[in-house]
Image 1 (cartoon, rainbow, N blue to C red):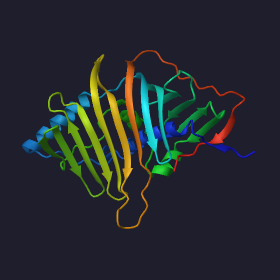
Image 2 (image 1 turned 180 degrees about the vertical axis):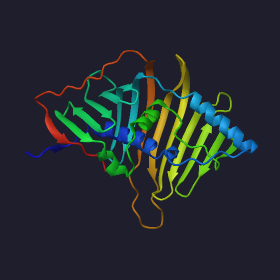
Image 3 (image 1 turned 90 degrees about the vertical axis):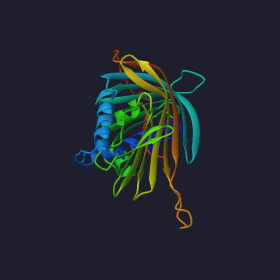
Image 4 (image 1 turned 60 degrees about the horizontal axis):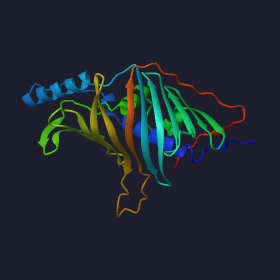
Length: 279
C-alpha cells in the first residue's frame, strides 16, 4: 500500500515550522563576519551587538502555550499549541483546537529529523530535516531555529551596518550582494521591535515583529509575535508569485527551566504517511 500524504491537521503546523525555519535559515550571521570598524558609529553598533548577546534568551528548558493564526496559499486556520524546547536538542509541539484541549497533531523536531502524528487522519510521519532543506534551499540548523522560537536576534552586525534613529526607535541596516536586513530596537529598553531580511536573488522577504514584552524570571520575553514569508510577484514580468505564509502567535504561561517531558508514542493503528510541505 502506498503511503498517504499529509492532511490538513498537519498543514498549519508544518507551515508554522516552515516560517520559523526560513526566518532562521536566512540568518546572515552564519556568513563570515567582517571586523568592526573603529569609528564612533562602529563602536556604538558594537555595544548594541554586545547588549543583544547579553540579553539572549538561552534556557535549558522552555515551555509555553500559544494561540496561533496561520495562513498559507490554500489554508487559513486558528489553533492553539503547546511548545516545549530542550536547548540544542528537541522542539516538541502539540496542536489542538481553540475551543477544546483535544490534541489533533503532534510534532517533534530534532537536529536531523521531523516526526509528526496526525490524530484526525490516524497517520504518522518520520522524515529527515533534508525535507525542509530541499524545499528552502537552506541548510537546517536547530540552534538557530530555537533562536527564532525564543525571539533572539537573527541579524548581523558588521562593518557594513548602518545605524539610524527613527520615530520607532533605533534602526540597524546591513546590506551585501545577496541579503538586505533591517533590525529595529526600542529606543527605551533596546528590546527587539522587528526584524526583516530579503534574499536579493530569490526575492523572498522574511519579517517578524515583537510586542507585549514581559519580564519572566531573568528573561525579557515578547508574548506577541507576527511572522511572514513573502515573495514578490515581479509585477509586469508575467511571473507567478510564490506562496505567502504568515503566522500570528500569542504566547501565555511561559516557563523556563522547569522539568519537562517530550512524549511521542505512535499507536499501532496509525499508518505511515509521507510528510508533504504545502505548495
